[in-house]
Length: 298
Length: 104
Length: 154
Image (cartoon, rainbow over all chains, first blue to last red; front, side):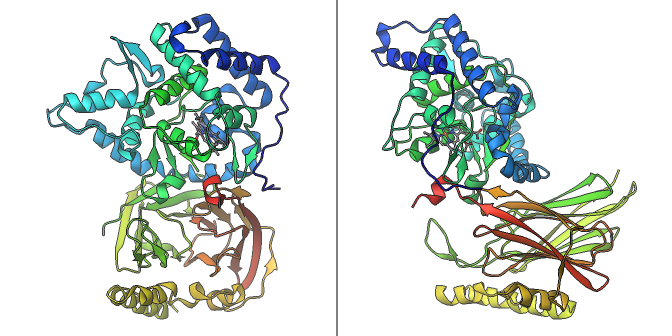
């Protein structure tokens, strides 16, 4: 039965080690950034292991690859999952993707197109990556390409950007996330993203982890909360809620902004340093989870 | 207005499933435009007809409680190669549309 | 039956197009009423009488309603009906002011499948009525509409 409680059930996990290590990590990163070195690759690997193990023990029947489906993967969502499966018999995102693929290959003012810009770039499962003194995100690279080819840049919150990112990612659906975090810059962003993820904010004083780690699978008013593991592997997504306003496809950063607003925190701009850091952190936590783009969300 | 119509023919058991999507607002009437505040007049699809080789196989009647960008469908007995499936619809504003698929 | 419906639909179309030039308030009045009586009825029994000519129906375990038990999204509730042998099918609900969502007739195949996506204004029953050999039967499934956090927040 549905309980309309809007407060959470207490977290029943016994994985204290996991939480303590993250508590320490969050506390440590609260110090001025330049005083502390970026976490080592070994530390990051240990973070990944603990993070994934936490969810795999919390939801023993959900295999790692299933986290690409977001909240649909969780047993607590079982009574709702059928709706999602029925929608996928004729997925609402298909028409959007037809438009997206056309736009991906459409000539830009210079004569080039986006598809050509991305030849030679790493696969989407390796984004974000550091190269030539810069951290690259897919949306960032799309805007660079548009600029270089005489077109205007797009807002990372827009449906158009979401469609283009999806056009790049969708042929790679099924491939697993695999981020190269050897560079100092990516590890610095990782640290920043990790702190952002575990720090409390907003009028409600909630961290991302409060909802998507400690309360993953629990009900929050009408919603069931997804596990943070798998976050981003389904994005850009087609959301029914977004579709009601005619702008159905949304990027990961649009979802971040929505989650900030949920707890009464000011949403940040798409492609802001904080959101890129968060994307880096989540992408690394998803190492080994296959992507599925686009996806259908409520 | 031109609203796009797409038709899918999916072979399953015991027959072929016909599904069509119409990118239509299905405006129920009485709602306001969020930007301008003006009332949006009702405009929804009232009828969808599935035909196989010109013969009507099912007619659907829709009202304002069918979702935006509706997907409706039915199942017909097994089709054979060369059969032509046509779906057609009309709404209360006088617009209509159709799509067709030939079975391979 | 068909002609009457087409006549009404045309009247409706005319009303709608002329309604556009009238004041907002009047448009609303016109827009709110569907001239097809089965769609404008506010009682399930009336819907059934208009559409099937009878409202007596017994429960029927052979009708299968496939729909989520719970949904966040009241604007898009997908469903699938399997009622082998059906000649006419109506899908109604007690969750909306006018119960009829979708109906299917002129069915020539025995599979009796209807696929659709509905708006449900609140938690309620999806009820499927099926006519076979002049006998009306029905099946029922409850759908809980939970609403999103954004929507339920006052």
